[in-house]
Length: 333
Image (cartoon, rainbow, N blue to C red; front, top):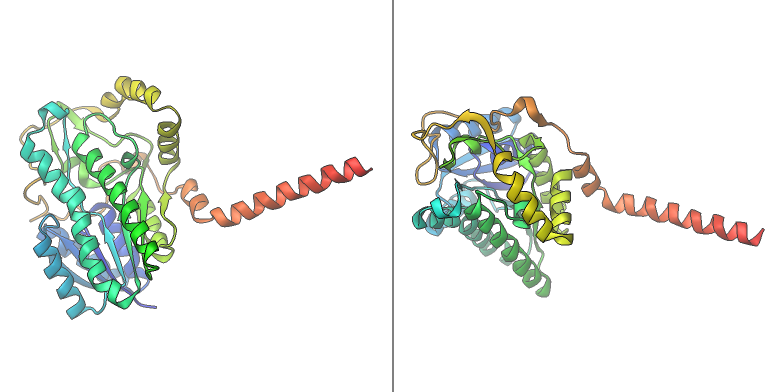
């Protein structure tokens, strides 16, 4: 069935890859982002994939813009079935080197942007008692790392917001579902977009996955939104598990390795443009991929396991049951 899907941060990265994947099923996709060239490229990608596209220039930090975008989507495409929050920005620097206005802006886009999108979606979905909202999270929603205090703080905030909202929807027995997808390091243009005060160019902490891996997880979550969250990539599982079991040990490990792991041996241009306050894709379409194609994985075995946890549980139960029967037979013999 054709759906109306809204994707924020749709001009590049995970948002761009997700929009294109929804389009392959023939969905009508609304693309919310700031950069004109990026939006134009996303429209072309969606239409090439077989979907109908609607580009709506939007700064998600401004609720008024998000609300107007939602109104336009329903006027031109129809009732919203799925809303995917992806838009983000960041500052790569030690906390003491981040200006208060910069920290506020990261929070407004990366956290409040999700709040604004969720509110606009819920205001339309709740009266119809149907719909799905997907929050694109990160392993950093559970575990903060050095040089990303503003981004990690925003992702932690999204996690708390998600937990609270989910319980409220369950309490009212709502037909609207909200789920969250925790992502690993991804090969997206963000590492050449976000503001950086590092002396060397930044990189995602390996292992790195292609944005299409994230997009497949987003689509699956939109199709199966009753599950509270999904984990993508073995590194995500390892990070969340290690932080739950031994957070103090992980503190020390990240203090030793986390700073160098996020940089490559190439100097950063201190004058390069960034997307903190203004888009950088106004006259150039960056697409979904970053500069790490040669190091990025196109598949995640852990994602498959996450999607098939029910089947795996049944198999494990059957194996355990067979073991019990075999043991009982031996005792009986």
